[in-house]
Image 1 (tube, rainbow, N blue to C red):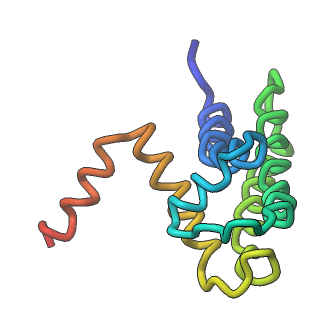
Image 2 (image 1 turned 135 degrees about the horizontal axis):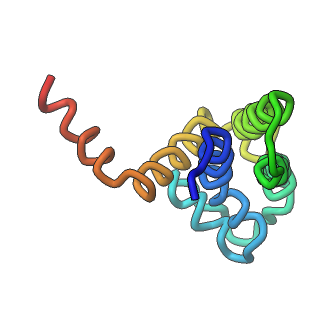
Image 3 (image 1 turned 135 degrees about the vertical axis):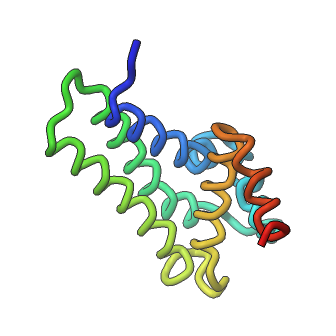
Length: 138
C-alpha cells in the first residue's frame, strides 16, 4: 500500500505528538516526559493543571488522526491537519507563559525540541548521528 503525502504528514504529526498523549493518558508517564527536559516535579505537588494544559495537545493530535482516517483528503482537511499541528505547538509554547510551568523559561521550546528529537531518533536514526557530526565537519 502506497501512502499519500497527506498520510505521511498526518501520521508523522500524530507520531510526533504521541509522547504528550501518552504522558497525559498513562499514569506515571508525565514525570518521564518532564525528566526528558530536566524538570522534576516536587513531591506532593499535583500535576492536574499541567495535564489540563497538555490536553490541548492531545485534542490536536486526535483531530489530526481523525483527519488522517478520511478516505480521500481534501484541501480543507489538509489545512485542518496543519492548523491542528499549529494549535498543538502553540499550546506547548504557552506552557511557559501562562501554564502551570510558567516561570520556567523556554520550557515549551525544550519540550518541542524533545518531541522532535525523539521523533527523528525513532523514524530516522541515522539523522541523529549526522546531526552530531555536523559541528565537527564545519
